Image (cartoon, rainbow, N blue to C red; front, side):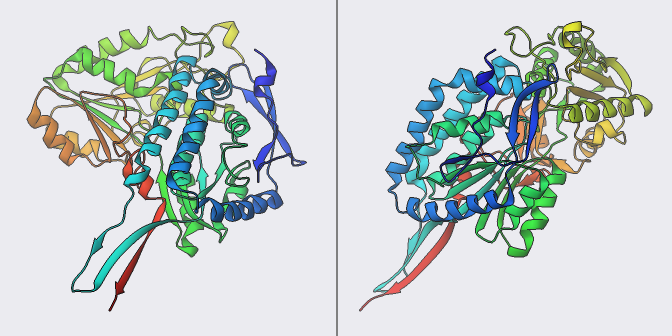
Length: 480
């Protein structure tokens, strides 16, 4: 692989490349070898990003809607030409399977085009109560928007998630993940000539950088994809200035299998939902499988048989599905959860270890892992692992099952597998989460995606996300 693919020009602020004196090394999680040196944005650079974003936004807000949409579509065309390169960056830096990474780039483009097509639909309302009177409302941009992104799908979160705020007349500062920043920084090479300098900025750094930006008075709107702990910390920092904030956080999602379900379908949806091609580093993964007692043994046998077939290995090889988790820190975290499951009495049915292939010995690989005999009180049943670990739980009584399904602090997604319309509708009403699958998997542009409870605030990937980057102004007028 050409190492120039991973060589970044710096962080991107005010249309310029910045290279602060402080830097750190980003590694390839498949072999723990260096991929790139990444500069750490200084406080002066962060301040410049905010000031330049504020200045550029005032210009951009006056740009006609069609011109904004055309700019996003032009960016989409440039992304499509380099789709394979961006996919490879995420494969080598984040460990995602190359087959998944390609789809992720294309999905980012599809969502950007979706938002560009919706821009004319963000409209105000009108009404009057008497002659010579009119109330009308307008949607206006916030100004500077801060986007803080997770490491699991670095390119998609960077490109796709800037579309809505930019289309609505805002400027954007993106703070990418420290663990997988390469594709976000390389993405900036496409921006010159499309957008005014300062309209889109990509910076780096840890919690201190994030806190500086979150607290900055010129940043009015914040959108976050992160863990619950990080989301709560950001919300606290944003609270004194009552900033508008949306949070897409973690999940501990149940997949509920009824006694009338098709076992093959249930297993297929489990595997698809777990996203082994991202090593289970997916907030929507159904990591808790609640299977009716009648089907439990057959389901478990089938699940083990199918998961055993999933190839683990270097993620840039087309036939491999499970690559390495993103970092040593994540590797250690997942393994601690696996150990806790064993210590608390769950039965380890599959995995729980790393591959024996010498080619993978220096990487952060974890074999797909399945536990049975899992109790609701166990850590592996309550906390988000963000790794390739499935907990299978047996149920017989519907009310007890629903109590377990709703027992965690999370409420992001849930899956239901049944041939009964009554089961499907009753359960979808009672489950406490923001997104429900019934005999299905996957997400689609236009369908609102967002969590309840500690899984987040607000929805994304739909019209409401686009509108969320605007403030409502009402005008009440009379004339003679």
